[in-house]
Length: 248
Image 1 (spheres, rainbow, N blue to C red):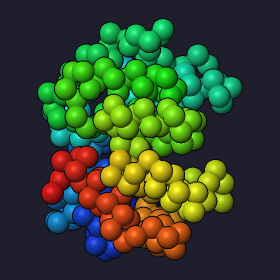
Image 2: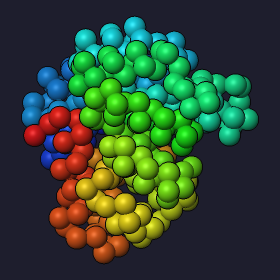
Image 3: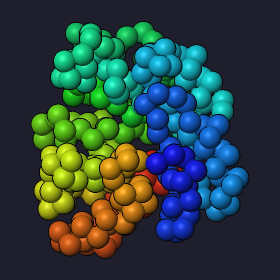
Image 4: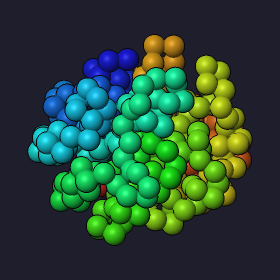
């Protein structure tokens, strides 16, 4: 899906909005145009700190904030934790021996000043916990653990929530192409962590999957079918995400 198609489907589905994420480029200018093209829809921009934007590039985050980005992801496809698991190069580490890289501290300050969401990306669980602890101590209040169930223990996810992060659960992980979990398992994990500490995203946009808006409809239907209450489903797909990004 390209950005225009994604927004059209979201508006037709009656969605309040979405965060437009690219692993390769900052999306705030595109998101701003989509919001003008589709009145009533909030398309929010973001930046992922991969090699394509210079990695842990403070200037890139500053520029993203000035152009209206609401979310900054730590490295995803360029993270050392991710690349090492994929048999790639050394990748980007954000922490070493429990200490964050100086650039990460500067990025957290930019995020705090701009009231941005700081998401952990594909860094390791220990790096994410170090990140969230430092962010909390600096007064960053919008924190997102990026689908940590893929590589974190229950104890690590609980610690992330204790530090103030909400835990993301992606419906993409339930799709046949991924096969990592089932809707029932996702619902059980949300129940164990507490719906108030979780958000559900589609993470769709790939050519082999339905449009992201349809992915959200599927997620809602499957979580209800798995026994979650309508109020808890509303919390993870609507109330908590809006609160996290500062809408409503």
